[in-house]
Length: 226
Image (cartoon, rainbow, N blue to C red; front, side, top):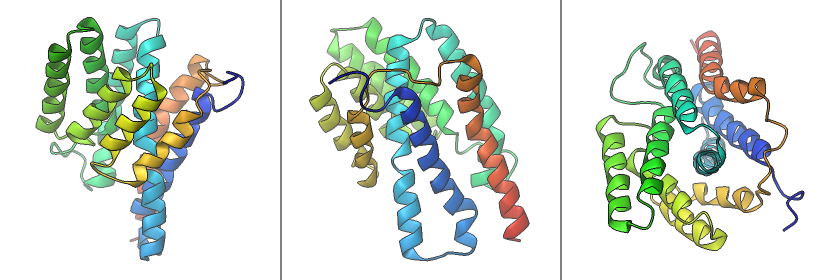
């Protein structure tokens, strides 16, 4: 494939963020007014596409970043920053210890990838690293749990073989949602280009989108739904 064709990493990020927003928009706002099965299934189904794309982008970022420590630190900072908006949106409280936001899942997934690469070729140890990361996710009740870590691991393990990655990724997605499997259509069109979102300001704007959009939707919910 010509690398100038297809979908860039920046476009994949925007697609994933947009799908996530539609899901959260329904859950926090539209469900107050449009409580129909069609609307719910459509919005939640669109939302299911976002996590596999985020996982794929994580594996790409891990493979190409110039500083993995800084990458992990960035995920850790935004995991902490996002926890208050996440708890407020989905638990209706300022602090809820029984559920952690998606940044924690991605951070643990990044550490798993680090371990898998360190023990490259030692498949039993790699499987143990993956199981350890999955156990941590379950213990701390991170979003998407052990299935999220498994998806990150298989996407990385098969990242040199697009067909195998797609089959393995879809198989894992089916553990929680058949709609999530459709994320592999845009993933398959990835052209290995970073795209326009390559400046520090654009990068951080993307990270800030997660906590900010939750806060905005919670505010709209309080204004319109009470």
